[in-house]
Image (tube, rainbow, N blue to C red; front, side, top):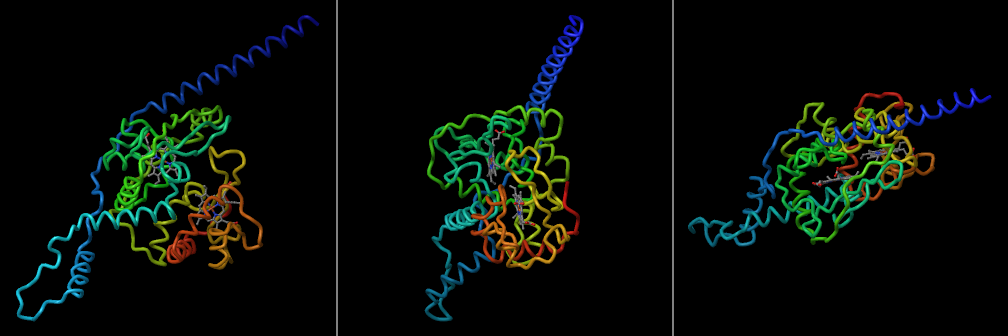
Length: 342
Ligand code: HEC
Ligand code: HEC
């Protein structure tokens, strides 16, 4: 009897030690991964993007039409004299940036509607991943940011000091230089917010997922495939070309081939992503109107409601123009049909 107890005791102790050793290893391995210093390209991107030749021509024509030359023989007039082209470029960039963050790039979901800080995940098991303050107020993390820093963080997941940032940068890799520039122009135009946001702290689940490589560091994801950022985005149109560009933000959850499946590192109450390819297990047979209802009203064709986190897309899809949605739809018709991801 005594012997059996002793053996059981040793069993329990070794389990406890085993668990402690595993926890220690996981914390250490995660610490090493989060201290790694990454190198990426460093590009300087203008902010705001200068007006295009076509925009300048249109401005000149507009002013000429408003104030035509007195006679054909009159000396040529410089219709752009005294016009602050940079101010006009900035005004347009801010407006475009506002549309981008309200419709296609969900920065405010984690950084707050005023960009003063917000919540990505706050769960004892998963961890506390708060979106930092991106305005110029007290507690700003971007006060010293150059455009190269914005590029490295947003599109590569690398902070200015080279360490990896835990934000879904892989979703933003395909963002065009001009889109990034427009978003920064918009964020920089916002009133400063004073808010100190605590740094990211991982819960036990993320520590283990990170240590075992189950959850990949975003910078590793980005740098593991060739990174190409277009300078200008494709023209907004109801085309597969524009749709392919816009659909890049869906891949973080629906995966790069849109097969869907469980979302790695997601809070327990998140549904697995659905297949959105033209497969029988996907959106084969859907109409465009049903697709729009799924995006804007979180409603499936059979009338049932979509669940978290897809419901979060509804306010953004509501701000997407019909043309933008038509582009997404056109593109999803062209992707290879594959079964539901596991
Ligand atoms: C899903 C949530 C989420 C989304 C969406 C998101 N972020 Fe973040 N962002 C975070 C988190 C969390 C951090 C903190 C990461 C860290 O410290 O490891 C962060 C950090 C940053 C930083 C770095 C601040 C620093 O500490 O240097 C910048 C810049 C940034 N985000 C910009 C953006 C922009 C621009 C967008 C939209 C295109 C965006 N983020 C979208 C969650 C998000
Ligand atoms: C944050 C993660 C996330 C993002 C980003 C996301 N989705 Fe989803 N989506 C989901 C989840 C999860 C479901 C399944 C919800 C359910 O089953 O209730 C879903 C369901 C759908 C459905 C319904 C499919 C069906 O069969 O019911 C469509 C359509 C869809 N998403 C399209 C998109 C498009 C297009 C984008 C990009 C513009 C996008 N989603 C971005 C997570 C996401």
